[in-house]
Length: 394
Ligand SMILES: Cc1ncc(COP(=O)(O)O)c(C=O)c1O
Image (cartoon, rainbow, N blue to C red; front, side):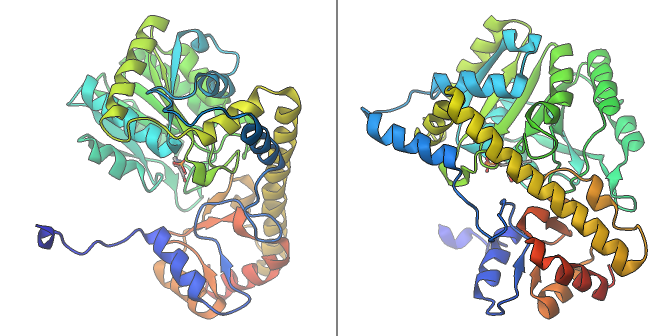
């Protein structure tokens, strides 16, 4: 039977990782895979995480199954972290999932269950996995315009025009903050206009927030999402602890449902639990236990907050330095957009030829499409990075 399968193309981002590893040039720079790195090029374990793990190891009593909805102390804490002090909190329910990927996939299955003819609208561009996850659930995927490649800003006018045509069978997938791959986020005004359209036309907003805390701050990054979910009857949210807790490999995230009533939200969560039962069954315990331990302990939470703040500040500093260096090298402000982008990524608009040249001649690895992981740079590499960019004609 397996001969019926064709040769897979492979994931463009993951395949760059192995070519990078094999590259023997000492000056090589990996700006491909979306992980945060510190000034030593490491993706560190946060101290708050380490302390929580030590406590957990000492106090754990069982490795028995978790149950379908996962760890309730995690669910409660992550829901509060994302929704904050909103009225939506009182009519929401949360399911622990294996990463935001697990949340996206379970929420996609939920949409298909609720409304098999639903269409999911994703931005152009969007997170590389949005389309395949939605399609795997059997959903039709449509695109709305998002990034203006010339200005590297959101084309809010074109986006809103497309969204204005959506109705009750449509789901609008948005990025909560730190847009992947572009770094260009929605203005508060656009969140407000989207909210008005959702109220008027009845489409279902679905917000994927995978980088809360890496843009402007925990509350600041969730402000648009909170404004929206507070004012609509129903909304879906997927969130991740991969980046803001550095728990990439623990596979921890959550699917949050906001409904008209708490009762409806709880029932919807039961559906999601059943859908998860048909795939991975129950979520893994460790990541949820770490996050719950941190968020439910004032000292650990404050330590985690300051570590996250240091990460955020490092990225903001790198962006500032990049803008300054580009200005000096090019005598122009055409790279200023890097300073206005949020989070780990910036879409540079590099062509495939320029990307290939960067890799071949400068040992700088960028993914197809031209997304650069700013958080993968060291300050000491900025001069070389900027010179290489200018050399390839960016
Ligand atoms: C926008 C977005 N959503 C979801 C995910 C998936 O996150 P996780 O690793 O928690 O599954 C990512 C990861 O890169 C992302 O960028």
